Image 1 (cartoon, rainbow, N blue to C red):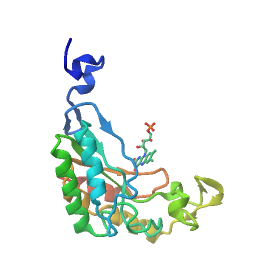
Image 2: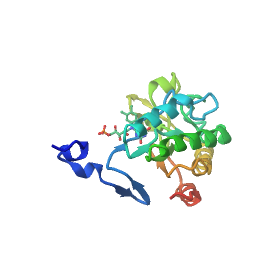
Image 3: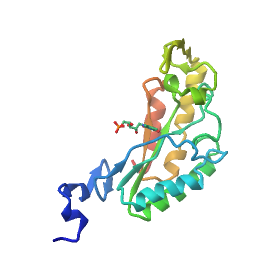
Length: 203
Ligand SMILES: Cc1cc2nc3c(=O)[nH]c(=O)nc-3n(C[C@H](O)[C@H](O)[C@H](O)COP(=O)(O)O)c2cc1C
């Protein structure tokens, strides 16, 4: 009888290396993005709890981690500062704490993709909204209470969130790659996203 976990399990391919785009991953185990609430410092960096959380998953053997979404500053959405990591609130801190996070995960031979987003739009939760009117690209029903109609974003608000989304902090943070989360109700022009992808030396 084999003493190896790999040969005892039927799906041995799950333990074989694979590739996701340009990223070599040591096995077929990937951790999906899950909102990093409680993982931010008041200035929008990753806190120590977050770094330990992801490092623990890497130590457990997961090959690829996709972080929960880090929201760039979007005044229309109004996510309170310090709730989730934010690449544009304090860019230097975000960059250094993201590098710490990447180093810890790499220490276990796992890969990490940093997910960023421009805002929640019509799917923002009531807890984050705190009684305010939700804001979306159009005056559409709020996802969690269709009797509420979202306020339509102004052109200035769209420009502000697009320009924040194009900030290069994510790639300077040196993850293995970056991903941009677009909820169905997040409006962005294609240009800043293209700019952002081109900025990343890790694409
Ligand atoms: C609590 C929670 C938080 C999530 N946060 C994110 C997120 O930050 N970014 C994202 O792209 N998806 C997020 N998702 C979606 C999940 O990554 C996943 O795509 C979704 O749960 C569907 O996968 P499943 O069918 O395996 O549950 C979240 C899901 C849950 C349940």
